[in-house]
Length: 238
Image 1 (tube, one colour):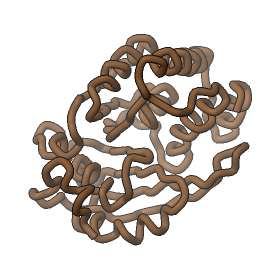
Image 2 (tube, rainbow, N blue to C red):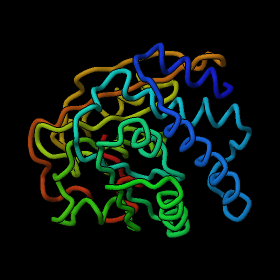
Image 3 (tube, rainbow, N blue to C red):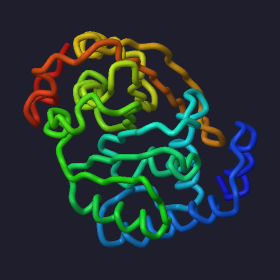
Image 4 (cartoon, rainbow, N blue to C red):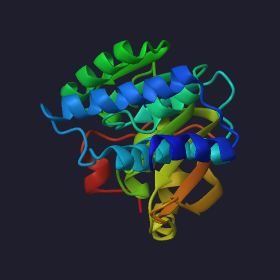
């Protein structure tokens, strides 16, 4: 996906990027590649691939969920900033908090936010399990996102405790979302969530499957969740 295709395909979805926003994506790409030489941020460094598989793919959440309001979004395990930083560029009114367990990635994100001149962005070095029991953050976000972090039975325990009642957990998945949902259904319900919608589409050009799972938080998460770091992945709620 070249830059013009990126701009045109977003325009087809009703998203018109300004010159400033296009410039921010260019700087994002340059900064990502530069820092990737010093630390492992992404295996994808080809420019066309970054624009398709990182930038466009991240923004695709907004094709199915309204992100035009000034809400507070928390991104769990965002790595190099996906999906929340591309979403922040497109929807600057969003307030974004990223939690990641690796301090090197937090250093990169702080640098990136300065380069892109982003405001209302916060980066927290923490495990999702301990972040989720912190009363400052627990059940305080309008939207929580995660992209390819873990299977749904595990991911739900890392993300749903952070969503306020009435808010949403948006999980971005590639193929096998149906199997993951079947295995993760008990976890989602136990943690206070309910699947509201599942959207399936193909990423343009390469035609690979993508799924957006929209889970509404209907009731408070029981206090015992999330459990201690490492426990959700070793003993998922199934």
